[in-house]
Length: 554
Image 1 (tube, helix red, strand yellow):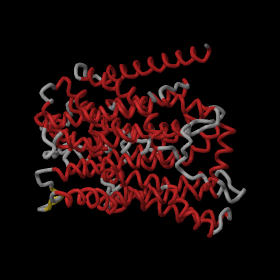
Image 2 (image 1 turned 120 degrees about the horizontal axis):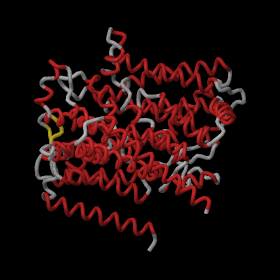
Image 3 (image 1 turned 120 degrees about the vertical axis):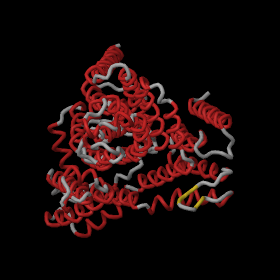
C-alpha cells in the first residue's frame, strides 16, 4: 500500500474515532462548549498534514464549524441580543459573516494585513535596488559555513524581539540570500525564523507579547510578573538552546533531514513547490550596495518601534515600558511600515538606484508576493471564529478547572492543555488569555496578600509560565497559527512543508519541557528545573550528533 494512501486511511480513522468520542459525550445538536467544538481544527489540521494542501484544508475546517452551528439546537450568541439563527441561515452566517467578513473588517486583522503587504513591497524594493544581492555577496565572503549562516539567522532573530510578525518577515527577507548561498533548505530557514520569533518575544520584557501577558493578570504588576516567569518558561528557553545546538552540531532528523540532504544537492524546496514568485528577486540595477538593504531595515525597525510606542501613549507622557504594555501592535506596525516605505522610496530615488516608475511597479508585485499569506491568514482567522462560536475555549477551561485539585501536577497539566488549545485554535494570545485567569482564580487566596507583601508565590509564577510555554509550543506547531504562517512567508517556503518539518523538533522540546514541569510540581527551584531541561536536551542532541556521524562514516 502506498504511503500516501495509508496516511489518508489513518487520518480518516482518527477523525472517525474523534467523532465517536464527540457522540459519546453529547449529541451533534449540542456542539457548543463540548468536544464537538474542537472538531473544525482537527479536520483542518489533519487534512493539511495529510494532503499537503493548506487552502482547501482550512476551508473544509471552516465548513465543518458552519455545519456544527447549523445543527445546534441551542441559539449561538454573536453579540448582545443577537444569534446566528438556525438551519442554513446559521451556516452561511457563521461561515461568511462571522468567519470571513468580520475578520477581514476587524481593525486588528486589517492592520496586520496592511503591515504584511507594505513589508512585501519593501522586500521587492530592496531586491530590485540590488540591496539583497549586495548583502548576500557581502555575507557569503564573511559567513563561510552552513553553521555560520544558521547562527547568523538566529542572531538576527534574537535582535528583533519587539514583535513576532515583524521578526518573521524581516529576518526572512534579510537572511534568504545568505542561507540560499550556503544551501540551507527553505524549510530549515522557516524553522530558524519561527524558533526565534515567538520564543524570543515571550521572554523579552519589551515586546508586544509582554504587553499582552501583562494585561491578563489583575491585582498584580503585570510586567513584574512577566519578568518572573522568564526563567521558568521551559519551552521558549529550550527552543533557543535547540536552535544553537542543532546549528553548532549540524544535527537534523525527521523530514527536515530529507530537506537538508536535497538542499545540499541544490534543491532548496524538496517538493518542487516554490509558492512565491521569484521574478522580483532580479535587481533592475547593478549599483546596489549593502547599505541599500541595511539602512531600509534599520529605518523599518526604528519606525515600527516608534509606531508601537506612539499607539501606547509614549508621546503623550506615558513611560517607555507602559507605552509598550498599552500599545496597539497592529496599528503601530502599520504606521511604522507605511512611514518606512515612504522614506525608503525617497531614499532609492535620491540614490538613483531605482526610478519613480520602478518603485511604483514594486507595489503590485509586493502585494502579489503576499497573496498566499493573506489567503492562509484569512482562512485561519475564520477557523478561529468557528471555535469561538462553538466556545472551545470555555470547554477547555472547564477541563482545566476540574483538574486543579491535583495542584502538584498543575504545571504539567496546564502546559499540556495550553499546547492543545493553542494548536487547535492557532492563537497563543487567546490561549494564555483563557488559562491565566483560571490560574489566578485557583491561587486567589495567595495572590490576595501580594499587594501588601510584594512577593508572588513561586507556584503561581511556575503555573503562569507553564501556560505561556504551552501557548507558544502549540502556536509553534499549529498550521493555522499567525506566526507559523508568517515564518513560512518570511522564508518563502511551502507552508505545509514548514509545519511538517518543524513538528519533530517542537515535539522534542515539548516532551523535555513536560518533564521539567512535572519536576516543578515537586521541586520549585529554577536552577534544578531549568538545569534538568538543559542537560536532557544537550544529551539528546549529542546522541543524535553521534548517530549521524556514525551513519555518515559507515
